[in-house]
Length: 283
Image 1: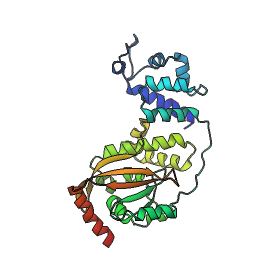
Image 2: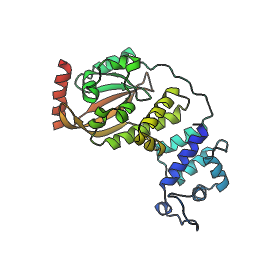
Image 3: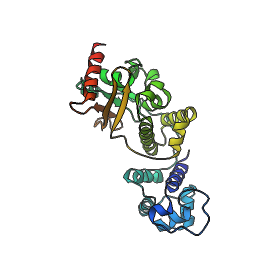
Image 4: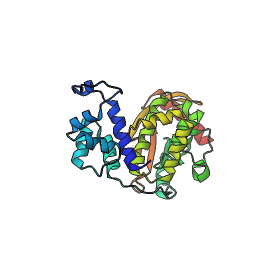
């Protein structure tokens, strides 16, 4: 999909999310055929002509100014991440797809990860590839996979692929839908920043073809960074536990993140994680 087409789809998806009554707008006096705002209503709210806004949605206009993008963000009630995504889509020029370099974990990051002996940790690449995990991170999230698989490129796990296509991972998350929305929202952000990434395009194409749930979430164009979130897990060895995953950007590799998973101090979840830790370290 071209950059201009992505911009148009994003604007249409955000327009469809709003209704006139949601934003105290008097509806235009025409019969409404679809849910959401009309193009003319968005243009009115943003202070631009309807024909100009239509050209933006159709990918037929040149670069929009920051002032226009800011007005559209206000009109469409975009949050800060959606606004940034809009600017990225609007500022990019068509570029051919290219295969990016292989992502690897440097020695200092591996040293850092080893320090989390009793805390699940993993290193994620920008496309949610698992570049490394410690024994407890492996035992918590993917004990059914070979622990050494991140070190073998053909076998390297990908969290998005696991979440949508691997039955074990789908079963692991009690609130699977919320986790799925978060991962797709993150991939949308990455796609806006790196539209030329051939491996990301391949991943999105594969998941779109193989999973209708992914296709529906992807077409919604929601964007959200994966920073910190709590999830309820249903683990096959230690039962149910609530964990919080925080993704920390690595200073030496800013497109990689260190995922650290914690539990509330003194909780049953902490006891479950301690039990799993003894299993993982003795395995």
